[in-house]
Length: 111
Image 1 (cartoon, rainbow, N blue to C red):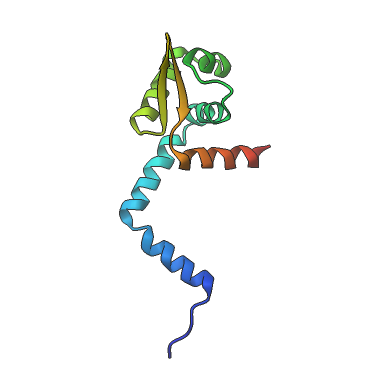
Image 2: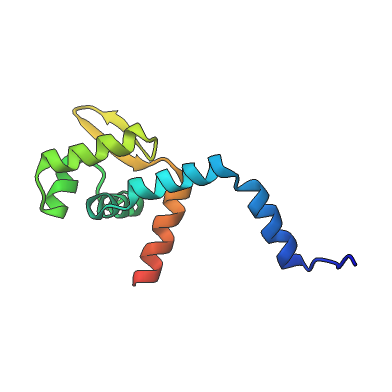
């Protein structure tokens, strides 16, 4: 006997089909990359546009410049953030819209 699926079951099936193994691995890799206390703090600052250069970032976070640079480079390589040169400064911003959305959700839930 065939039964009719309700809309929530249909949506779940569509999501399951769409989220094949490759997409799940990409999502897991993205979440692993941002799931570090320093990277989360950096993303929060970058997403809020409060700080966007290395000097302001390490000054705000009270960590060594090398630590900030390491984490920024890692996120740049993963295309999570982008860097733009303005004169002598390099300005960073969140490039990945999914990460921007995650950070917006996290910060709104924590306040």
